Length: 300
Image 1 (cartoon, one colour):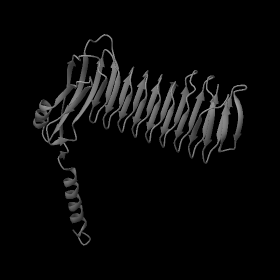
Image 2: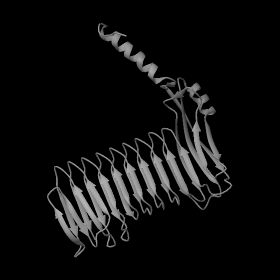
Image 3: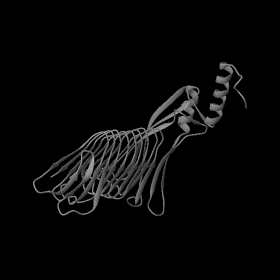
């Protein structure tokens, strides 16, 4: 199709038609109906993994010894071209709770087709015991507390908070801050356009981000290595008295600042913007890389 000879109005009309085709089966709603639903599920055993898949909304999960079953509170919304259509679509929307033979429990929400841009759900889930957790959503935040097993989170355009979990956490996000506190296992983070704040961390760390501040405070008994890469912001690392290892740091357009307790830094070769230092007896190599901002290392 050739549109170079068309007038501005004709070009705009063609582009609008192309956009409409690209949208496919999703329509932009004019009206949104909302309601809050509560569901319970009596699991045969504590779920080996709790999987929650949301859409355009937050997911919050926490263990609660006061509840006997998995308790789901869902703030649902459905869009429609009219309010009557929105109400009908909301009535037909479903909260699905399934349990596999291996003990995995999955929680999802579904809406009637065609999909609407107004469709969204905010999940709050409580259960007696939380083992592994797998959370996926878009345009929403995820908060998980007290998971005893591995944690996997994928989201976008909002924050992620992980508190008091005990095994490996893998987090993929964008356009939101990530906070991990009081975590025992390793942490792997891939994100952009958001700050990363890790506090009282016992395990190892691998962080890839951009346009965000990275702050890592290791547990005083931790000896795990740290890998952190960002740009356009600082990296701040604090190591406890049990930490031994080698730190390689590199930045550009700024400098590296080091604060060390007496005798803890056993060798140091740091220029203004790159270099290596050895803490205690040395050991595994940690790498801190940024650009257009500085690196601060505190060794206690």
